[in-house]
Length: 146
Image (cartoon, rainbow, N blue to C red):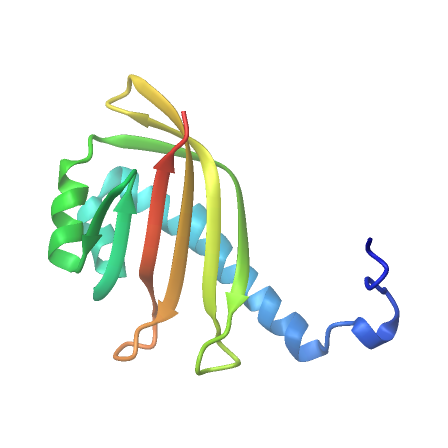
């Protein structure tokens, strides 16, 4: 079944690939652990700055496009406290091979209004903003799973 998997040196990652993966991992870790959920739970107006007019956000089945609609949706969601239990990330090809887009998947627990606790699964696609060269959220989808 897995006969095509080979651990010899012909399949080893290049130093450049290792560097890109490490850079992607570092950016994803900062985004998840230090930035996004902290702002989401404490200052949603700052979270909105991570989105652009091209962004799409889906919150438990409700889809919004663009900053104005995403800001409105975020203002309607009850106060929250997220606890991320795990996350994963992958570099995604972009027009800049040295700085790929980043796919991030997280899961954990979220409590709304200090009373209603749910498991969640959240997917992000971060891309480079062409005007600032910083990462922004092109797409995200949060789904409550319990």
